[in-house]
Length: 283
Ligand code: SAM
Image (cartoon, rainbow, N blue to C red; front, side, top):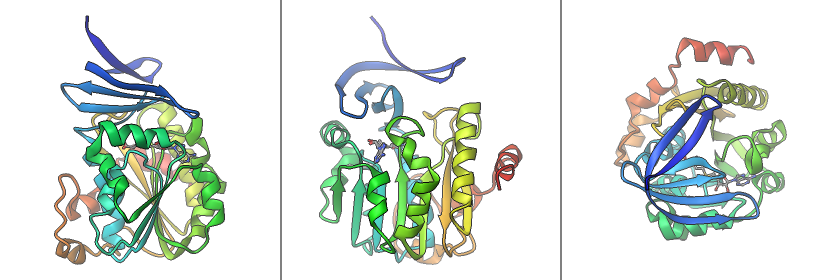
């Protein structure tokens, strides 16, 4: 009997991965959590049936959501990750010795515990002494912090379910307040291709654009995400993502990556015309 994981990318498009076995299945207070074993993508984490990461391609997402802002701000010391309970984003940030502390705020401790057990390649970072995990709602956490962080990374689920609040004007406004005066916020920014994802991206961008003086969008190719064309938001109080990138300094850190590099960093902000048009509609 064949077992397949299938995710509906639209009502008319499905994406399937052949599964060798189910390693973990649970329902937390917030969401259904599954960890599956596959031949092609290794282990897969899904939340409420939506693919979050696979062992094979998670490096793309986690390198792009971290090294782009860190190449602009290699002096970052205090970092806040909202979501990211799988530990992949924290793993990449920990590669910077100048980072003194990472506050990781994930609403669901069960995600972190399941990933610690079944996906150590990302979750081992959660036990690093520089990482402090807070298992609570990021929307509430951010209300009580001001002028504290150099970098905020919003590594959330999609804009429904527990993650919905992390795409609101209130949340982005509070992230602005929680950042130092040269702070940067980067967020997973959905996708431009399918209508529902494109609408979510446009709505989030409008709210971020209204909250930050500098707000740009960049892209990466993530095979297991809907359409493979995935976006990230770069919002800043002071720095431009390309003009202020310090690639000399970044290269001197000798951080070995498999996807990110300075040329790709610059190129990632060169968006297709149809994506620029969608963005311009709300700017
Ligand atoms: N997309 C990432 C990737 O590709 O590796 C994975 C995202 S990470 C698993 C998303 C996390 O956001 C989940 O662990 C979920 O529990 C968390 N989350 C959802 N809503 C949240 C909220 N309101 N506050 C904090 N964390 C939240």
